[in-house]
Length: 278
Length: 358
Ligand SMILES: Nc1ncnc2c1ncn2[C@@H]1O[C@H](COP(=O)(O)OP(=O)(O)OP(=O)(O)O)[C@@H](O)[C@H]1O
Ligand SMILES: [Mg+2]
Image (cartoon, rainbow over all chains, first blue to last red; front, top):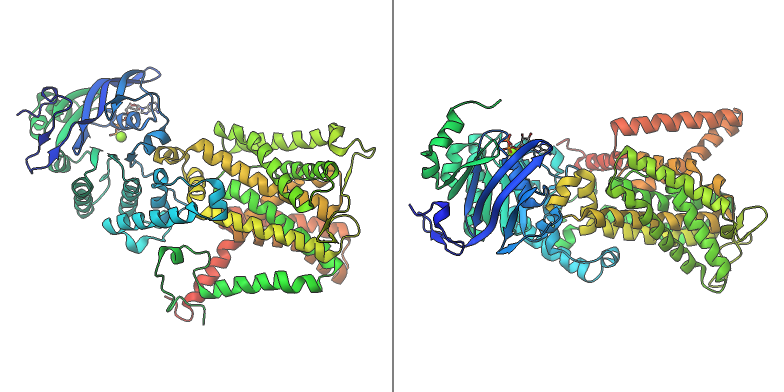
C-alpha cells in the first residue's frame, strides 16, 4: 500500500478506507532525541501527523510515548531534533504558548483541577479564545462580560456533545474515574484545537466506557475535523480507531504505517510478544 | 420553607452565572447592604465602631486580599503585615506630600503602590512554591518592617519614629484624625469593603480567576492547558496586594491614627489574617468576611464573658483566647479546609431540601 510513511510527500494527502480525506503534514517531528541525565527516553525519532488524521502511538511501558507528547506540548525540550508545525520550524516555545497555538491534550494520569466545578474546568480550556484584560474583568464591564457569555455558549455545546450536562456544577473531585476522563476530554475540546493529543484516554475503563470514548474520539475527528494523536495500549481500540500507527520501543521507532502493516511487522511482534521489559 | 429553587429556572447563561442564584440569598444580600449603608451609620457608637465594625471591615479587606493569593491562587504568604505597612506608609507619604488631594484617592493609590511592591516580592513564586515561598514572604515581612523603621524618610524624620494621620475631609466631614466621628470612619471603610468585594467577585468568576484556581490545583497541567503561569501568579500577587494595601492604609489613617510599624504591622498581623481565611474558608469571598468577623468578635466576646461576667483575670482570658484560636485552626485545617463558608453552605443545602431528607 502507498500509506507507508516515507512514500508520502509532505503536501500529499490520501483518502482513508472509509472515505475521509486526509490532508498535508501538520506536525512533523524530525530526528527527535530526548535525554534525562543519562537516560535516553527518545532516540532519534521522526514521524509526522497529517491534517485530519487519527494517529496512534503505541509501545510497551517506558517506551517514551508520553515523553513524545510532552515534546509536542513544549513541556520537554528535546536535546536534538526539530519540531515543525503547520509548515514552519517551531522555535523554543513555552507550553502555554503551544496550547494557544491550538494544541490541546489530556493526560495519562488525570490532571483536572480538583477544586473547580466541571463547568469551570471546561471553561479553563477556552483560555486561548478569551482575551479580556484584568481591568475589564475587575469591573465586569464590556468585553469581560460578552466574552464570558459567548464562551459559555461554546462550552455548553461541548458539554452536550460529551453528554455531561447533569454534572456541570459538580466539583470534579467527586466524580468517578470514567467521568473524569470524559471531563478532561471536554476541557481539551473546549480549546477547539487543531491538534488533540490524548495520552491513554481509555486506560482503566470498562468495556462500555471504552466504547463510549471511542465513539467520542471518532465523532470529534469526523464532526470537527480535529487531528488526533493518541497513545493507547488496547490494540483492539488502536486498530479500530487509527489511520496510521507509530510503534516505539525503548525510545526507538520500530514501526510506522497502517494498522495492518504494523500488525504484521516483525519488530513490533517481537516487542510485544518477545522479551518482556521490566 | 421558602428557601427553594422551585420556579427559579435559568433561561440564560448570564442568569445562571450570577452571584446569588437563589432569590432568598439575593434578598438577604440586599437587606444586609441596606442595613450596612442605611441603618448602621445612624446608630453607630464610638465603642461599636472602634471595637468591632471598623476593624471588622478593614480585616475583611485584608482577608479578601490574602484569600485571592492563597485561597484562589494557592500561593502561601506570610507577608500580609508587611504589605499592610506598605499601604499605610504609602498613604502617610501621599497625605503629607499632597494634602489637597482627596484622601479616598490617596487610599486607592496606596493600594496601587502596594500592588507594585507585592508584585515585585511575588517574583520568587515563579521559581519556588509551598513552604519555600512562605519563607520568602516571611523574609519580605521582616524586611519591610525593618525598612520602615530604618529609613526615616518614610516617617518624615519624626523624632518618635511614628507616623500620625493628619485630619482629612470627605464632603466636609473629617474621616481621619482624632476628631473624625465614628460614622464617618465606618462609612469610608464600608465603601472600600464594598468596592474590594465587588472587584474580587468579578475577578474570581471570569477567566482570570479560573487561571488562578488552575495554578492552585495543578500548576503543570495548567500551563500545558494554556495558563501563562507568570501572568497568573503575578496578577494574583498584584490584586492581593492592592487589597491588602488598602486595608493597611485604612488601618493606619482611619482606624489607629498613629502607627509604630513593628507594633501595628508585625508578623502577628500576617498570622491573624491567615487565620481569618483558614477559619472563614480558603477560596471564598464570603469566607473572608466570616473569618474576619469571627476573629474580631472572639476577643471581645471572651472579654465580656470571661472578665466581665466570670471575673477572670485579663491575662488568663488572653491566654484562653490563644488556645481557642489554635484549636480552631487545627480543626479547620484537618476537618474543614473550606472553613465557615463551607459549613454555612452545608446548612443552606440542608435547608434547601428541608423537610425532605433527599
Ligand atoms: N521527567 C523525567 N525524568 C526522568 N526520566 C523520565 C522523565 N519522564 C520520563 N522519563 C523516563 O523516560 C522513559 C520514557 O517514559 P514515558 O513516560 O515517556 O514512557 P511511556 O511510553 O509513556 O510509558 P507508559 O506506557 O508506562 O506510560 C522512562 O524510562 C521514564 O522513566
Ligand atoms: Mg505514558
